Image 1 (cartoon, rainbow, N blue to C red):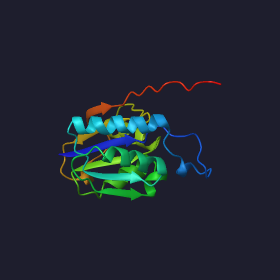
Image 2 (image 1 turned 30 degrees about the horizontal axis):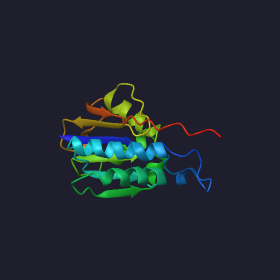
Image 3 (image 1 turned 90 degrees about the horizontal axis):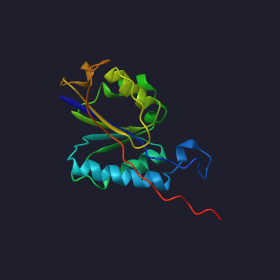
Image 4 (image 1 turned 60 degrees about the vertical axis):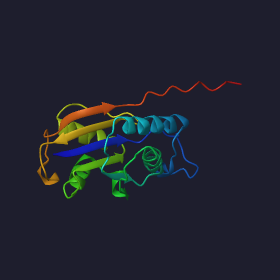
Length: 166
């Protein structure tokens, strides 16, 4: 059996100091979301397997925070192609993987589109959404549209105080 975990990066700042989208950092809410998600993954004993993460700053921060809570050591792969990938590219990205458990940390709309395609149901991932699906196969080459089974979905609920207005 194969397992795919999909994590959309946590809430981010609207802009970056450089002006580049790829350099945007997590907002305070995103840092809190990532910590809550990491604790949840640890408490639920979820094995993340190989982690494949976009090389955008916000996805790396999300991955780094979550990784602090993991008891097992997951190999993390930073991949620039995950930053701009669409659904089809993400799907093809999975086909040559060997690990039975893969975690993708990336961006919308591609992640939502991938989950929708694999489950054949409308899925929209918000920031820090975690979704886990399994496939009744032993090789990633065998996955196709509608072959995933939804195991689990979780989104950390974080409520930060409103800033004081001066």
